[in-house]
Every structure is written in structure tokens, then in C-alpha cells.
Length: 107
Image (cartoon, rainbow, N blue to C red; front, side, top):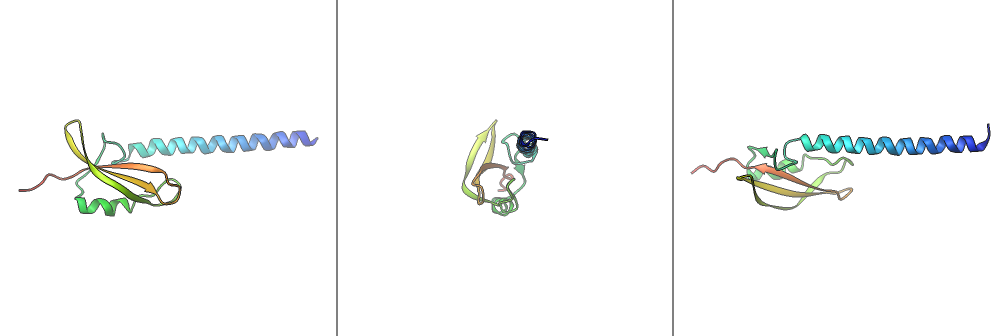
């Protein structure tokens, strides 16, 4: 067989590997959006403000790095008060928002 054949096989293998990687990234993104806290429609609930930072430290990025908070604040979505923490991955610098519904205040 000539070298053109082997070059063609190598190119197909490279494109197939890239395609599989993109499919896995899309699947991971879809899966992550179903986890509590990643959208305002599905916030984490029941955590006290002091527990939010502890929870953030348990989350890992798809690249394997850990997240650190960059900012935190309150937002109102569909009549609910939520806390939102903005995070950045220490390895790949991807950004993520994490939504929390704090427990009701006791008087």
C-alpha cells in the first residue's frame, strides 16, 4: 500500500478523535445543566450562607480543576430570592454560576 493510504487513515483517525471529544463535551454540558444549582430554575436549596463556600470547594470542573468564587450576590428570579456565586476554574479558567435558594430566615 502506498503512503497516501496511510496518511488518509491517519487523518480519519484524527478527525474521529476530535469528533468524539466534541460529543463528550456536549454530553457533559447537558448532564451538568441537569444538576441542582447550575441554573436558576433548579437552585440548590437548604444550604446556609456559611455552607455555600464549603459546597463550592467540592465542585470540580470538566478539566479536573477546582473552582474558586470570584463574586457572590443576590438575584430575584420568578418571585424567588436566590444567591448566585460566580466561579472560575483554577486550571482552565472556565466560568460557571452556581445558584442557591437560601433557607427562610427565622425570626
